[in-house]
Image 1 (cartoon, rainbow, N blue to C red):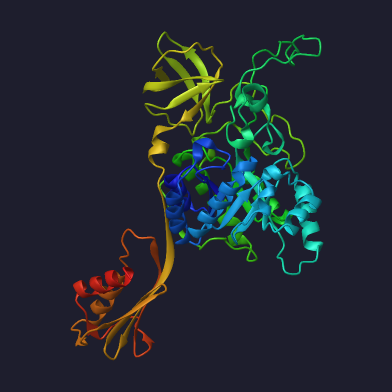
Image 2: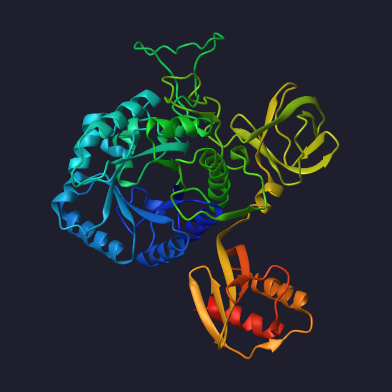
Length: 494
């Protein structure tokens, strides 16, 4: 499941292989900068459902008393346009006349114990978004409790877990720092990103604490966590009971979402292929990418698996809150206007690429061998490690296409011919004209009916029948190419 900042990003996520997207409504979506109209959400629902994918809407802010009727009315509007589920935090909404729609409990409901998850199931929730801080064993314990609890009219509640994206330094995103310091509630979509600012680390007497090198911890990004990346542990998470993997980032752009969704789509497909007990949640499809997915190629603060295997070191990056990208090499020499870099073997730089070190950076004007000419010469030392956080060639290649594989069947009937493409069938009245070249007649039918063009369909299998027998080498009748094309277009327009 992937974020969608808007309709365009939502469609890109579906194209890249998402089984579901979550998107903000016109209000109450916990991201003021990522609200969307009912009309755009309806368009996304229509697009997603073509591929058997789902659209979930975030209605997950804490509400004031006067806002409940408006939030309830919004829920009914969302249900009318076909939204598959609502993600909510404020449990008082359950006391209002909500539509008959699936409810998912936001991670901010503090979903970290079996007791809490089972309580939410009793309230009618169909899925919980687990606390990011849970370990594999804690997830397994929750799943064990669910499976061992008798279920009468209910099916077991589903477990959703974050696998990728930005991390909030506060537990399960329940942050009050913005509200206390700036009167901006993060729980109502107004986070000021104060965890991405510089801080000093002092003891109780106001003295600066020293780091391992004896230097004062002064003006460092002490609260800026690295991004979550659990891509190496998907199979373990499935084994522990997770049914949905959630990518964070409702403020991220189309490039980021396309790259990250494609990355996880390929990983999950490998796991599903190797395990016959698993299946994709949306319609299995044919994915075509013009790029090789790589999380380091789009916004990337480094990586941590967080608490999945209990506490791990280096969860934060004190040097920068910005995207670090991929390591490219080390500075070995400097000129007045150029930098010589010993590049890693797999790195190819391009004019316009963005290079960074710590929280500083520059763009490449031109390249001459190992010499980089920046747009503005930075202050650097030999030995500095450089990273690329903007790969212009990679970004231009970010195109994904998703198609549903369909079977095509063409057969002779007494009054003409019958054509079936996927679930659509139509009969066409036509004279049976004997073919002079029966081999070519068969090849022409297969070639023309396979041309599905720029659609969301891809040919899985095509068969031609005469007298209920498959024609493997010959077809007795001649059909003009223009006629075959017309029939194909007419059927696909039904």
